[in-house]
Length: 544
Image (tube, rainbow, N blue to C red):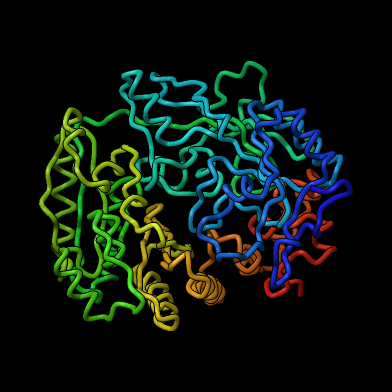
């Protein structure tokens, strides 16, 4: 730490960073932060700060190095930290639990920013069993919420993503997926309390009424609804959020529906769409290619290797593991007689796919959930697990590319073949998961696997991801959750009318954050001072 300021300019790092260029914060700022949150909750030593860096990033590369980590314990402390950031012109980058693997982890988009972590703000503030909702702070994990509901013996089903260790708020703020009813079309959250960039406190929707009774039961407001402005944005920090839950169903049937041959992918996608439109499949079904299906459906990942798997090898693996070319993880739930009807409709539709087949089906009662052995069975009924990460070798990392695709077989095929070409060109094994986030759209996640201990392997993954994002954007498929490295590039695809969308959001950013301190560059939205300084990735700026 120095007395007079950072040892290197805060912003994008040079091509060849070294220890002398790693950012720090002035001692005055560190002291003032300690006065706000307590000395033990301010980390400035490099080894301590690095505990919060993205574990999947390129070894030795400090492009996204933070200058410090601060962990507030109250809303008031969050407000004071932002006021301090404005006084000193120091950027702050919030994270909830700091997972976000495959997208940049907890690392800030702007190098040298202070990471603001919410691990201490981990209270479940309220659970209303009658209305089936909870209110949580940003440090509450999916596991925390599930445990709280379970310990109280409540008749409620909690939503979960693939890994239970992440933050409920953090996942929601980055448009992450959950797989139960409200995961479809991202309907999980209702009613936010937000700290704005200048430290002011705001409540959205009906919560804006002092003593309002419907702050977490009704999503609209009087006038413009603001909740969506704070998702994937840098316009405020959500410090309190309502979460909609469901009743535990009487009956539940997890499903594995196999597509034996890749040539039947279009038929499978169109079948899933029609089942979703008819209400026979609910939540967010996930269609995985062979290698991803072995991992995410069977908990049996195929060991990674240096050479990519050939088409014939993938076919053989699909046969051996009974996941075919594609396998759908899905479920039906409800009253038993309704589940039986839905199952009949689903199985009849799937059998019409030429290579379609179904793993044995069992209908579980709500008292039988402890009998589940696979994570896929747990996830689709809201039981958190860490199996996906526990079953992955420690050196294996992933980087995700996430284009949004209409739920039409021909569109999914176009994206899959574009991705397949990039995998092959980079000498990587093909692996895609298609998250059916609604009746009409899917997110086709290309998970690029690599050795995180090897710089060449990591850089190959990053460059492959960059090419995927660029190519898909040109085809009209925008990335909805880009990695830090691709945020400017992904934003550049949203270029209608001379980037009118981005320019409008920049106007909002400059109005609420004139000093540009909150998460500059997040998802390609930079404040005025950084746009003037040229912090935007010049290869993706799109300022034509």
